[in-house]
Length: 250
Ligand code: F6R
Image (cartoon, rainbow, N blue to C red; front, top):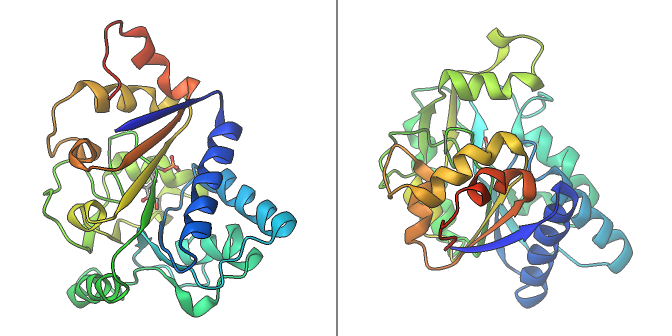
């Protein structure tokens, strides 16, 4: 894992956007794996700014998102479909029919995961996957204990993940209990992975990621076995790791 240390959220966002822009310049028809949540919002703002100022074109790009809640319609403002349109797609020139998010009708919709796997395969796989990390080490919505061989499917969200995401909902009961998420093995097949980590709340898990062995209790630890992972982390996120003298960063 390559670590890029940055000062703060703003710098993380700029560096991440630059990485994506370079990818699209090098391969205009890149398949980009995208994430939601608070972490990539600044990155998307920089992509929009660059599109407006420098005309970087996403006309040939294809996006596949990591996950979506189950039980929220696509036009629900809390859905990740809505988020992606608001935060990025409506402001750049990626054609709508080249943007994909997983979608499951219910928590029994097993077909949905298989279909998403087939879709990613038919697109030739993911060129660059952007990831955030949960405070419990999840990637996508693959919670601790998920098999490293998991493929896209229905997942049950832990109470801690529902609590962390409750900030976007009026009340806790409104936070969905399940989601459909790209599997860990699906994420690992991406040719490049960029993990964004910002803020003091992520300092314990980032420290654990570097210190701990690869284990299913820490889903992100599998990234150590991927040949092309770049972590862009800010000073707050790195604060515990840097305190631990002698830690090896890569
Ligand atoms: C989002 C996703 C999640 C988030 C993670 C961090 O699509 O798959 O793994 O990246 O929960 O969320 P934030 O960025 O809100 O801290």
